Length: 483
Image (cartoon, rainbow, N blue to C red):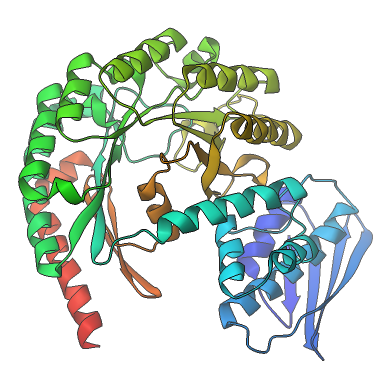
């Protein structure tokens, strides 16, 4: 594989789309020539494949005057990748509903265009002519952009969010690459981990106070937080209440996650602790798939946990599904979605299967869904969410995601997660605690990150460094102010 670009380089994006069509080890030559002259973009692409030559000559009228440099770069990059895909399509047909849009936040492009003053029709023209996004995905991106803007506009001045990472799980799922450890190995570290976490909560409260800020959202994720014992969770909730003004907190989410970790006592402590949003995540309602991917619960356990949470008074519940799990057909996914809809949660999040580097699935011979099947699953989702009154408000894409598709959160009115929007759109500082957390300090158009240690034992042993990392947040902000 050899890719040569002349006039403009976008190596990362070109390789991303190259991998959709060809194997990285194939003997293929790609030449791309970019020119911008007299307000016209011209990209000529040539691909030599198995001794034959395939080419595309792409033109687009584009005036760079009064355009932001970042937007110009996006259009230039899209032009190059589009020309490549046109040439590659003459060799292999690949269904690309998102066209050549390759960022992790498709709706952000729509929102930025709207903020730049482009009309709805002009935005649609750019998405169609430059990015070649399908009508269905344009509709999705538009709805997400408008819904997330409502939540972004409501972010309080001097507010921050808190993320608490609990890096423990009952077992490790076949597809998982999150920061978590199997409690059969790491369970002995739970007590000292929580002890240190309580001290980190105290330290974080001091830092936030010195920032002159207040906490608007709290999100406890992982891992599976409900892997912790009831008394661990109670201690965390109590310490949060001691340190922060809960009258100002809009959203407090607990990833209850796996039904085999949920108990009535844990839900009770969560409710008493101020949690007003929880996740109960089946991933699929097909029992054979659950066994295949290493989940220890059954669909009936999902239903029972959901009803238990309802009786406990939780009126904002999210449920996750994954489209394209190993050996699952389109009909099997549709069944899962229909079964979850029957439970009537306020939020349904549908993820596209993504094979990550750290996941055991990379070394499995399990068959994953083809791109066309993936697209059918997500189209079915989009249509049924609209029918049930749930709106798309949260969307992101990942590297190596099946079918080059997307993950979307759908919610009923008044139940959209502000934290989910903040973590993706990076408009609010998020301070991370616990294992594997990544603090994002938002300073206008610049973001600084501070990372916590991932492994529970490392977190415990190097806790002094964790506390120093919290002071680092103040140093970064002081440097920005003085600069």
